[in-house]
View 1 (tube, one colour):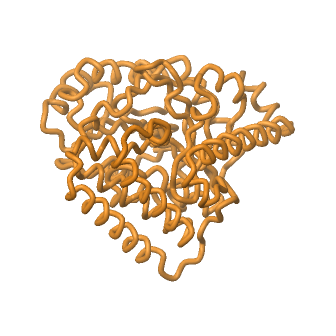
View 2 (view 1 turned 180 degrees about the horizontal axis):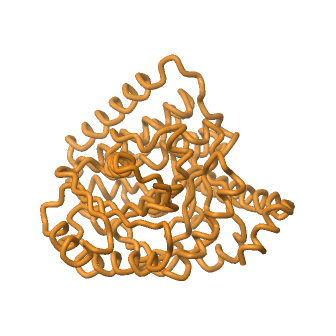
View 3 (view 1 turned 90 degrees about the vertical axis):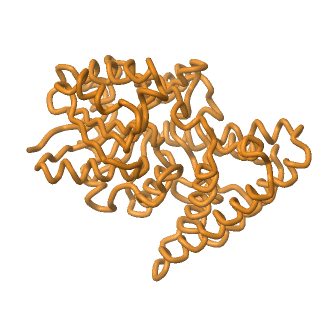
Length: 393
């Protein structure tokens, strides 16, 4: 059976971790899809140990489809299994939207998102990956938007340049190509999954969205930021407690992406990046550096402090770095398709900029702004897109 969209909500202990927000999220999603033909909501439980499954079955069982996995296979792994399960049932969806269980959706704007997917489907029949704009539910500012990547695997969100979600929506009238779509709300065209596969399940946590989008770019499949503020994201609500596995996954997966997609050059830049942390441990008053790392989503100093800052944590990071190298080298054998540092969706930042916080910040801002307005100007000249946009209004 051919349908339009499968919304896959991945859950792990949502009832105990999110409390009232858990119900607010599910209510908002189900309200958004009510009356919309060809859309199914899949609640995929990652081996929760609380009452999430029972409560969803009792309260939402007749409005959603429920898949219980028995154990935690990670965010990407859960999405992969949901996709495989729908195929087994004979359900073929045009799009698959994987979303976190801490996003409250605006029903009216969700329909605008569907309209854009329809337009882009007609323009890009070979497929694309996309993400909408989200507002941070805590501060009412821009959550992250799309991301650009430097060749060390570092992520630079659009909020680094434009902090207001409303301002971004006003500036960004048309879809913008980005390095990768935010995994918190990431949409796959079925043609993409059939060509390159879905998430790499071994990532388990962190960086799986980066990897699949870079893999897509290698195959000339774009990642797009859709100019619709679709809802609010109460980010990290269920992963706010720092654990050693989180630190390990953050480091290992970033190292893998850097070496796998940017080669030795990317690995060297990543090594320089992590080499700065001992300096920060000596003097944690380097506020500028701390704020910068917080913006790019990897405040490892805070993580280390939460873990006790002992030598075992340094060993853990070292092991993660080595494991990331080994894994990338194994997967890279016989392949020569490394992304170039200044081509495609990648920011061309020099190694020296990673040593200087000020230089890195300025280079990133300039590159993001240039790329933003270049793409906007390019799309403004596309009569086809303008015609389709007016037709969908």
